[in-house]
Amino acid sequence: MKPTFLTVLAFFCITLAQAQHASFEASTGGFSFIPAFTSEDPHIIVNAGTTNTKRLSFHLLSTIRLENLNPRGVIFMSRYKFIDKKLKASFGIHLPAIQIDENFNVDTFFAQEVLASYPLSNKWSMGLFYLHGEGRNNDFKTNFLALSTTLVEGKFSFLTQAYGLDLDTTYGVSETITYKVTKNIDFRGFANKTISNGKFNWTLGARYNL
Image (cartoon, rainbow, N blue to C red; front, side, top):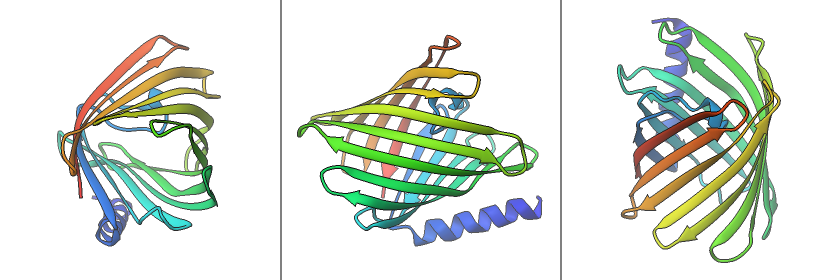
């Protein structure tokens, strides 16, 4: 086990211990901010962070391979809410975003993001997400833009995204459906159609919220 991996693992444990909220999801696939990059292998998805009611918040997102319980990716995010009215907008930095292969080789990335959301009614809202990412020890570089709508109907919520990125001129649409079973448990279904290459991928998951 390499020292870099041990550092990542220690940082992950410390961040999780300091979190004010957390969720654990067992899923048939992984997670990616870019729907076309979502893994089709079973994963545990960990999401934790400080409260988002304040201007500055910190978040951790990690995917762990269910087959051998080895981490696949870890993202440490800091976000600053610069508009906090009916329209909410935040600027974020991923420092770093880390991807770990099965041999514990680590690729690191630096990314900036802009998020915005606006409620249209009690049920409907719309959102925007922009991400610019660059590899630190690799030649990866991309710009990603997604426009979304969210509908909340009873225990169901429907998140629809239309997205594009400048890597191989990739664009598509995705849908995430969440059903809230209890205050702490929900089920999620995700489906993505990458229109630019015809690829279709989907995942199912069960999530526990602390």
